[in-house]
Length: 115
Length: 116
Image (cartoon, rainbow over the protein chains, first blue to last red):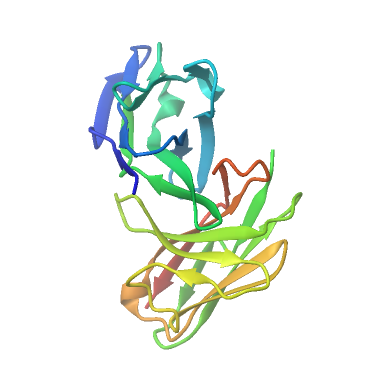
């Protein structure tokens, strides 16, 4: 079974500063990796995903993430955050099981951008 | 990208009544949909997997008689909370699996249920 660990439940950061949200996963087989963002009282939307190929993945809103197989990590980064980036961020992994892709989410990291 | 619409976004009901939440895939056919429950400041808890034309698969600890799921068509899944109680108050989110079958999910806007 796979699992996802988001090490930081909350990350406060000043506007225009860089940020890194950490995600580690465990799985005995290859997985696909995702980052989703959730704004208050809304559903989740995809920020970026890693399926294969280049380990550096670029997503929407200036975010990027790097897949590191040896460290089983998929950390999310942004060089300069904006107030509008304040939201909850979820890391997720999926693997094929029982006829469909089984998705496991991390507990989420709340990014608080301080003006 | 694929769009999933969830309705209603907010619902308030009295204890003992039933509430139905709809989840529609607007521009694609969704063979598989998922229902999640999200508690305040917590992650998403998968409640059940809904497959078109067959019975839903419930996660351990989820009462299937209380949370009725119907996936009658390739674009519609419904969650009915039967005989709702205050402890059922929560944020419910549906999602549909993308057609590339990588596990990418497309989420509805969520439904905030408040049971008085």
